[in-house]
Amino acid sequence: MALIEIKNLTYTYPGGSKPSIDDVSFKIEKGEFVLITGPSGCGKTTLCRCFNGLVPHFYQGEIKGEIEVAGINTLEHRTCELAKHVGLVFQNPENQLFALSIEKDVAFGLENVGLSREEMRKKVDWALHQTGIYDIRERSPHEISGGQQQRVAIASVLAMEPDIIVLDEPTSFLDSLSAEKIFEVIYRLNREQGITVVLVEHRLDLTAKYANHLIVMEQGTIRLEGEPRDVLCNQETRLIGVGIPKATLLYEMLKKEDFSLGNKPPLDSEELADQILEALK
Amino acid sequence: MIEAKNVHYSYPSKIEALRGISLTIRDGEFVAIMGQNGAGKSTFVKHFNGLLKPSRGTVKVDGVETGKSSVAALARNVGFVFQNPDHQLFSESVEEEIGFALKNFGFEAKVIEDRITWALDLLSLSQYRKTSPFLLSGGERKRVALASVLAWDPKTLVLDEPTIGQDYEQKEKLRQFIMQLQTQGKTVVVVTHDVEFVAECNPRVVLMKDGKIVADGQGQQILTDPAMLELASIVLPQIAQVFAKLSVLGLPKNIIDIQEAKTVLLRAKEKRGQ
Image (cartoon, rainbow over all chains, first blue to last red):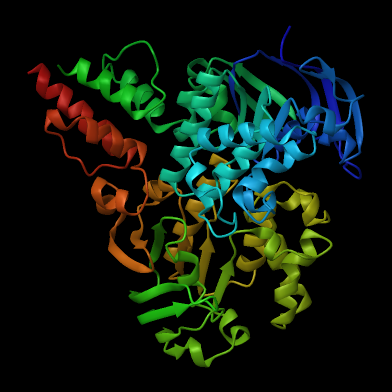
């Protein structure tokens, strides 16, 4: 059975004139790295809020359809029951950090679950190591850089050992090198720990290479879905206004001019450079 | 014209955020200020409309020293759009939000109406005219904040991270709009991490690190210099990355534009064929 299964989901915010999510159905399997993209206002963030029950339990509004996450019907179970399975990381880490030290912030979720001190210590240390912030664990989350803050936010959800981590544009406030490092951390958690990742992003230049499942949304619906290379080379994706990675675009432009490159569209500069070197050998 | 001379700034916590910055931005220039988180970029541009006053040194806007002038007096000429739109939005509807400054500047009702319509249309927000800004998505709120400043048509526009949360189409519109402003002789200063956006615009790029300027030049030069970018915690734009990896072919390295990339590669292929 799929880890996340959504069937005919339609949702309207209180006071909204039209649905933010309009008859959406899809499945996410365990261990996938899913990238969700689409024009701003297309419903990406709203969809993320469905995964841990913030929609509809916190935001209210009108909802129809079915959502099952890790075998739990989110419409019938509360956000706190889902927190063990789904961790949510927001765009701006400042909005979710509050404790006096980094390790206290990371431990907060576990304190609410009622674990023994030793168990908690073990999980917190593990999460701090995984995200590379163990050495600064005693510092205040408010005096560290934005990149470090976002690692703290990720560590906080990681400590709960969730099945799924959902990240909503987690690096948009970061410089590109810090952003790349965060994506590497997430990718490693996906590959080595088998954690399912759902990442909402506009910047496919930086992220397409990590994903094995790409979802393109528009006006509350899913317009395209599948293997990233296929979706990114589909003309429809371009018409929706998705920012195709430059390496993929250049590959297509060169192909049109009979430049003999391989048949696998590249997702980053490395893949494209290799194909060009091969062609010009 | 904006002239910063040896600007130092320390926050009340004694942290020295700016450590001697001198920079001249001429009328009609498009400048991107880039650098690591915490490099002092936002602190620096907040001096342009007097939100912050230098601890040492001077900032002059069109000859007026900002340290000796009020934010209210400077705002008419220097429009500022903050990084986080929630720091500047407060009205009940998008329309009121955009009209607020126009009313304060004493524009006539008819002009205000026209400017609101113009700004909404420009930023694809017309359908939200009567909506509360707080019901909109992050990317849309960001555009409302931008619209509310564009509406009063300031001579200089300072945009702090304007592309955050924006999709490709909105970024492209923003790029075209900035180009259009330039032809009208307006000055645009953008603080950004978005290296692909800067690569597409190819403006003058000022790199900051630890409260100082470490490089200043045309985008095409700065964004294709790996050592310089690493210093400022910036990743090369994807096209420049490709050419950095093609060094064995002896092709030029300073390429950030996709059309130019295509031309250069097709020429290289032709040469091989001969």
